[in-house]
Length: 429
Image 1 (tube, rainbow, N blue to C red):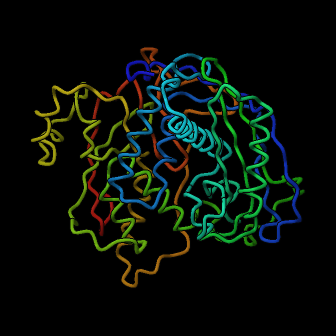
Image 2 (tube, rainbow, N blue to C red):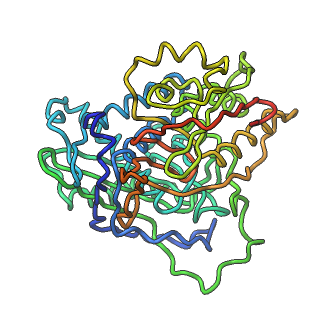
Image 3 (cartoon, rainbow, N blue to C red):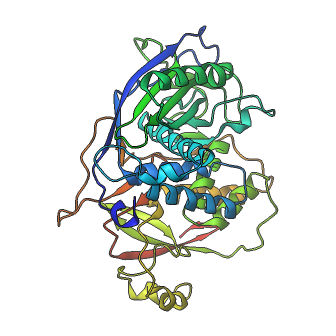
């Protein structure tokens, strides 16, 4: 899939969920009132959503931000060249040129991205790598999610599996989903994590045969209980309900988000608040530009070269900004990138102000939860929702996740509507 066609690949990739299997357990002693969302009958997604989800999962590592930024680029490039155009999921002929290890690596990335889309579709919001569950090499699932139905109860565990081989069949993926659930998910149900107890688990297996179109998707999950006649009173819910997120998983999620936005200094400050690095040497304020896209307002990091180049029309006061003036001449003759990670303005503002409050803490003891909002999920759905179009009829191609992160495709935004400054200790102005 080339960069030129990525922006116009607006057709949804509809993938039926060919089945799911519930696994029975004794009543959960941690969250007996938790009600898991109903599984989706199918999911649909566009190319931007899948590419964004692959990058999101690739950057959920406790690694230097500069390394994670390169992993983000690698994930996006893989999606462009190895996923084919068309209304149904397919792989390009380049997949046949990959060595077995490289094909396995790419399949794992796509499987992780599909899982992230599915979990967002179920309503979960914040995420982290599940490596924190075990200090040994014992097999465990890939990701932890918080928010949504899990708010106030704990976190849920998700195992991702992807396979691109001529032998892929629906029955084999069903067996993979079941076996990985039993081996890497079920042993951790009701176990503690740094973000709360694991209250539910999923195993998602995705696969396709190279040279064909279409894909298989199988789900295996913990037994879903019958709904109670009435939900428990809010006062009986555990911490984390109603928009409050466990602090550590929120910081892990937004660390990945700001790495994807190339706002590496924000990731450095997040690491400092978590006690993972020394005080950043650079305490200068950071500039974010405000832009509008698909009727929404977003913030983009001003030092991200991929965004600020023609055909954007910049306000005079933005062009004259000292952070920007010396860059414009060098960027004017470069080709336009169509991949821009940004964050929804209100959600980004709330998080950056919360981060500043954590930075100001004298005792550096983090609160257990943060009051953070969640938003819409755009770019993937369980019902193949129609894409949003501009007045000229050209569809917007973008993906927006519940934690506010967005990847913008085409058509490009035409105007920068202003700029905002984030002071690490003062917040966003």
